[in-house]
Length: 100
Image (cartoon, rainbow, N blue to C red; front, side):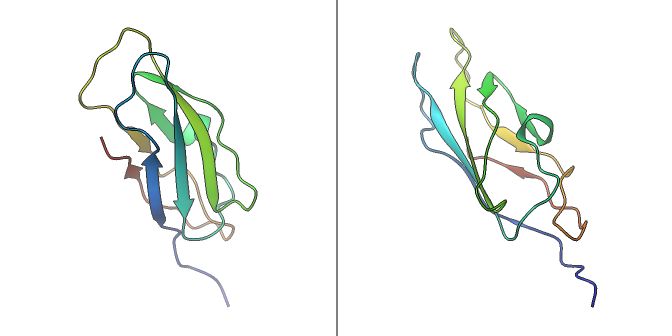
């Protein structure tokens, strides 16, 4: 039987959405199933900061540290997940965006 169910994004969050200078936030991305071709450097677009390479122990829950760009104030700062990752069966997953 071929698995054709696309992975989904259960949660995509920042631990702190009101960062001040010098602060960082933990980014957590939880998929519905293990993903095979996910790379935070390739698959996540980061505005106004940097995201350290996200890591996972089970390929389902991924975490990384977001560091905002110094001297930048933006009331609409989100991280964008592209559709360039797949599950272990090769099914492409959906895009997602963190809360502001």
